[in-house]
Amino acid sequence: MKKNAVKRIGVLTSGGDAPGMNAAIRSVVRTAMKMGIECVGIRRGYAGLISGDFITMDTQSVSHIINRGGTMLYTARSSEFVTPEGQQKAVATCKLLGLDGIVGIGGDGTFRGLQDLAKHGISVVGIPGTIDNDISCTDYTIGFDTAANTAVECIDRLRDTMQSHERCSVVEVMGRHAGYLALYVAMSVGATAVIVPEEKYNFKRDVADQIRRARLGGKTNFMIVVAEGAASAVEVGEKIKKELGLDPRVTILGHIQRGGIPTAKDRVMATRMGYEAVHVLAEGRTNRVICSNDDKVFDMDIEEALAMTKTLNPEEYEVMEAMSGV
Ligand code: F6P
Image 1: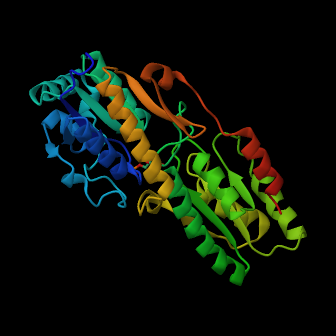
Image 2 (image 1 turned 135 degrees about the vertical axis):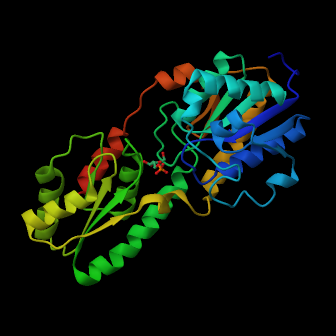
Image 3 (image 1 turned 90 degrees about the horizontal axis):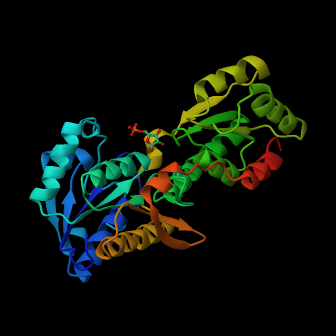
């Protein structure tokens, strides 16, 4: 795509929704408008691109959404888009709508979808939006901060009743195959122990001994945070009952973590990333992902981004270990 040739772009959200996606949509639309570029909202992710489910966006259409969780464009995980036939249909919609580029907001599945579109000559830019914060090329993904704060608030509430009854609480948090959310939340709530998929789980070492140590230190209530990708909170609870004689209560926070009013951080990051994404397309660049490291927002090649790996910050994990069992 040539510079200045960009007249019309599409924006979609795909995969699990994340608080702040609306702020990103708003930013894409308003940045485009400012630059004289028309913007079309594709509803229901790639499924909508296949079926031609779209709405014309203007400045007014994104009013009063910066403070709302979820995504005004709806989202989906499309099995049809994985097929060559599905992709052909999606490309046909892009052509029919005269789209010079697509901004896709979501996780790495969304980025892989963008790559597929790019193979058919569509210009694409991805914005990382997932509560899991599991996208390797970026330190930050939209939705993580809100989800973490929601989980912390829920666990603080649990703590009140656990303290009063001198109980043990086992809380499962989301994160799919990653433990970023669990570790961050566990540190924020001062958990007795945390179980994450990145570290091989050993019940005795990671849970039983931590509870025993905390007990010796005089504690009478215990908070165990489990990442959904590491273990089942129900099973951890059963084991605690059997091996330590406690009567734990298990809470699976589930989709509660995905909703709610986005934090200021998520709104600001989403706005900055949306702005950057449109500028990348307007400059005639494609196959890019917007990233953020050290409070800088920049773009990177999608293929390079998807080939990267990241793991838990070892320093964070070490600090958590020092805080565990006390
Ligand atoms: O990727 C976001 C996420 O919320 C994960 O943390 C979780 O494993 C998954 O989506 C749940 O997906 P669904 O909404 O399809 O149940």
